[in-house]
Length: 130
Ligand code: SF4
Ligand code: SF4
Image (cartoon, rainbow, N blue to C red; front, side, top):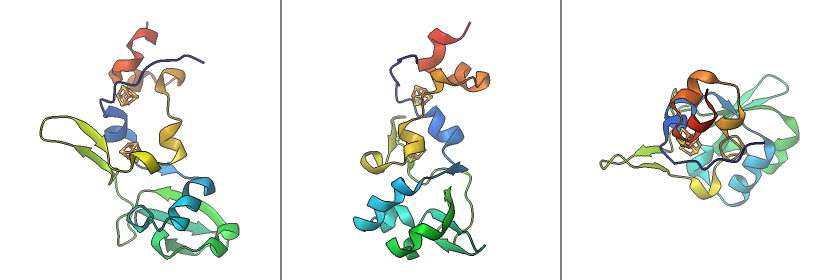
């Protein structure tokens, strides 16, 4: 595995910070810590085919979850951007849930992926692109 330093340019969040899948381990702390600000943007699908917005979720629901979708609007519709991505006026990029972001974001290391169009625009990937 290659080790690179993410330069926090935010291109990956802007381009791919949506239509990602979550894991149960993401949502347990959001429930126990009352992070409705995050949960309200999570789509939950159950094994019986029903759906719920994450803010209505309780720990008792967890064994029945079949899918976790990032991200949805407060009304429950899929959205094509991450609601926690913020590009400030000075151009700097911030994750508004940095200390609580999901595994898919924490573990994303594009220099270990074979996604060439992405790698070409990731400044931290440049060294690995021929
Ligand atoms: S595009 Fe690359 S350098 Fe920019 S935030 Fe994503 S991983 Fe980091
Ligand atoms: S939650 Fe944070 S790290 Fe994940 S896509 Fe959104 S802005 Fe990026």
